View 1 (cartoon, rainbow, N blue to C red):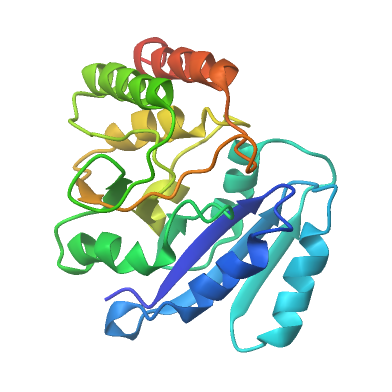
View 2: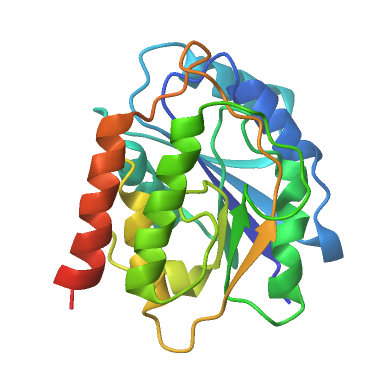
Length: 239
């Protein structure tokens, strides 16, 4: 039975939301008494993100927070690589700091792993009956195109390759040599994890409370083209 879940939170200029997110993570009660380690990787924020994290640590010394800061901005993928490297839990999950995803749903992703069925669990925004904010049509089309192309090359049937919520057994994700510095992390990790011998990948439906660009959303159309490049690079060219 796993003893600890490491929750990796990459942050860049998230002073407005990071404390509320940390509070939500702290409040989650994981099944079977599994402990939590919060790994915050500050990708050289220029706002008061760091101050907010330190003030949270002072308010709640009961929660384990493993804090790291990049000296220069390197990108979300780089922050995740740092988090994966320093995480000490038996399991690892990725959590954005922008409140689009609900940490209460960690237990949904834990279930297939704890029951012995899965090594990796993707939280799908397009699977099941969970609430999802209605936002940009072309974003949803783009996600489906990227997921379909990725599925075609990996030969797995995901519904949401681009989801933030991915949970891994630590030894599986730590065995990968990841390279992508920005949002190419998602297609890269999907391609590489799908090629591990005997890997068992599951999906569960999750809710999604998306942001608009005015509310701080960072991904754009250029990242979509980069994702296509990464799907081809880490599937076709890697072989």
